[in-house]
View 1 (cartoon, rainbow, N blue to C red):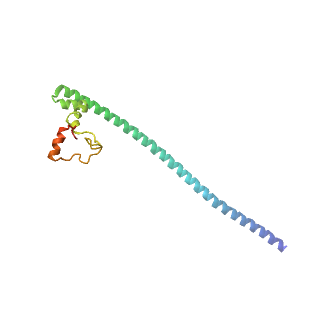
View 2: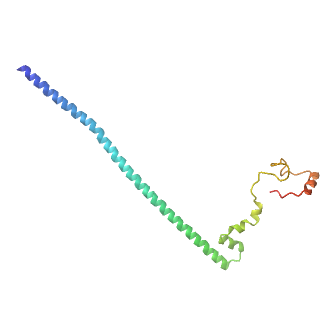
Length: 154
């Protein structure tokens, strides 16, 4: 009878050890699940904050664009008011043209003649790029050069 008690004690001890090992495994496996849930929750909160920041940034740019449009409109109104006032009270024609916004007439004056687009060729018959372009000539060469009329060099 003493031997049967040992079998029962061994069975109970093995059962308790199995329950303990199972509880420990469950606890260790659940710890990762809980950690994953916390990470998912933080990710969801971060995504929510990001969408809120994007929305507020979009609202900011819309408001800034509206303000810029208002400033442009007010600037145009101010320019029109100045042009009307200059038309009535000012005697300077150049100022009147600038205030009207016709800067083209000012540019076609003296400034337009002095600024020509750059060329990649030289005048004359010496080829596309002449080696003596822009150099002063000797007096006897100058006489022959004046005989053949060339367009002005810029």
